[in-house]
Image 1: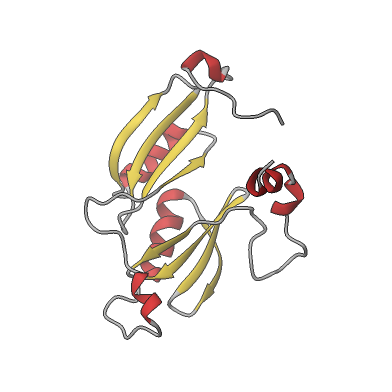
Image 2 (image 1 turned 60 degrees about the vertical axis):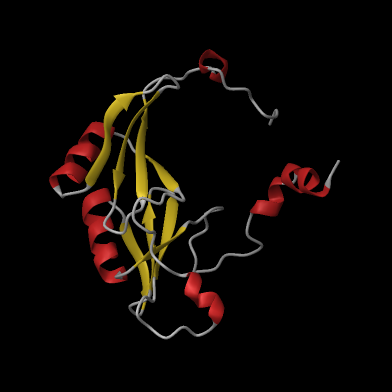
Length: 168
C-alpha cells in the first residue's frame, strides 16, 4: 500500500489533535480571496445565509453555515506585498474558474429566491439532477461560484453511472 493510501485509511489523521477557539473544527475550510473582505462578509451573510464567526482587522474573516465554514482573505491588490509569495493572493480573473463550492441547504427554492432577490448573478436556475439533488449555481460579488444543493431522493450511484471508489 502506498503512503497516501495508507494515510487516507486512517480517519483519525483528519481529526484535530486538540480544540482551538480560533479556528472552526471542520476538516476542510476553503479560503476565498476578495478585494473587500467587509463587503464580502455582509453580502455572503445577507445573500447566502452565512454567519460571521470572527474577524481579524480588515483582511481576514471566518464565516459559518450549518456545520461548515469558509475563511475570507484580502486580495491585497494595490498594496505592498510582504513577500513575493503574497503576490499570489489575487481575486479570480474574469471568466477564469478555478473552483466551485457546494453547500447543502434544506430548501433550495427558498434559498434561490433570496439570492436572486439580493442580486446574486444566477448561472443556473434550480433544477433536479439525476443523482437525487436539486441545485442552482450563482456567482458572488468576488467572482466565486457557488452551487446550493437540496437532497430530493436517495439514488444509488450506479443508477447514474458513478462507481463507488472504496468501501467504508
